[in-house]
Length: 125
Length: 219
Image 1 (cartoon, each protein chain N blue to C red):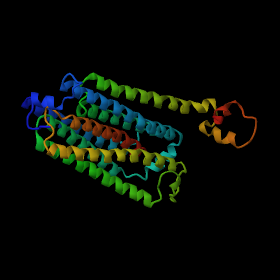
Image 2: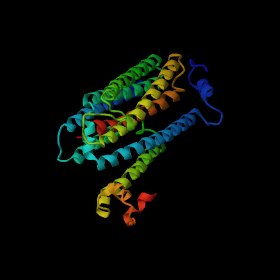
Image 3: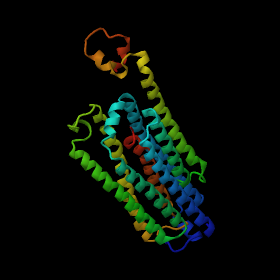
Image 4: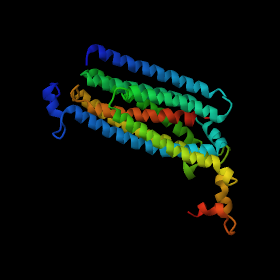
């Protein structure tokens, strides 16, 4: 590696660190501001965290100039994590519409020994 | 293993016979490391999914639980880990360009930042234990609040605990790298251990980048 490439590599790392520290400041600052709802604040925090993670993965972990196979492994693990997160969240968010009282149905059904109505079926797993 | 000579002789010294050349050997090791990191992401992923679901279910308990966490300490720890990632990548860079003393110095700096992270974590944990904030059935906090905040702390201790174990393992590995680097075992012909442990260290940093806002900054 030439001396020039070497010094520019170090410069990229310094710039990445500076960007990461600034983004940390922004995310801490944003946590003191109310963006309308709790989920709005969480979404903003997660978006900033994702930008930071991308910077680390691209520059510190060298994915930008690396064999694309490594990036494919990384991104596919994130996609599967997304599927893992999405379906239970959809379940929780929509359950109230199907079963009133959502997750708490299990405790209520378990107490009285009645002929279980249809929604109680999952409790017997 | 001779560390003084680089180039062709060194290439033969480090290359195992089933690889075509040392570049292929390096790429193969790296691919294996990335596969390991994918399993790490999925392992922490289970905790993140559980955390997210319970947050959706008991938002008020999550807000109450987060008020026990110190934003300043969390921010300092974030800065420590980001700086340690930076010194780690500088160590990888130095080892791949035959700069022995720079490699050692950057590895030592990484160790120092990681140690700072663990010291702050220790103060946070002991403060919580003192208040009766412990995981699972040992939760005995008497200061009130929604009962489900015990669950928030169950996640808090599981996630930061497993993450902390990763930091400790990383510190042991980096100490080992430092000794090897001091002996002059790494060069542009062979720096695979520095590169792979660097990847591991950055992943530990990545997980903290998500843990920090989710645990400390919910409100």
